[in-house]
Image 1 (tube, rainbow, N blue to C red):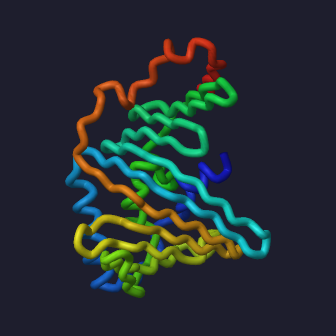
Image 2 (image 1 turned 180 degrees about the vertical axis):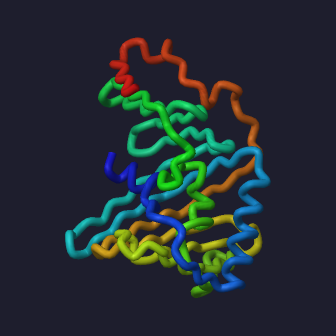
Length: 214
């Protein structure tokens, strides 16, 4: 669960201090945001790597997420998380348990999966970094430095596909020598979705323990 939380909520800190944003980097990130917000939905498959050489940690996992406005359907680490716009459902087949909780999307310091591609809009200074050619794709990295100096995040590198303006890779460097890398392997948009995809049906989990936190 700790790894799952780090994927979804790793970027949170106080916002409102002085900003220093390179115009070229800001133009690129604004184009990324506009592109993301133009879609009715997005379906992503991704790889997540956690590294810490000092602690001899090297973990890799894969997952997928479907996003539509604030709603999402996420599969990772054997868990399914569904957010229907009001409640969050975490389903653990291994434990045969469903945890239900309310979710306050108005909280500025909570980064939801629906914001995982636009988290940088607040709380960062940023500037252009290196360009990489990855299998024929030109990936422009933007370095993001958190405005809040007390955060455990040292900096973030956001890799953007220059042609599509889609986020390809996110690299987070922590102050504790931990590196996390999120790579988007598949990025599909405006897919036909089931009308019930973001709806939790309790009848499908009649044998599960329902843990309602509210």
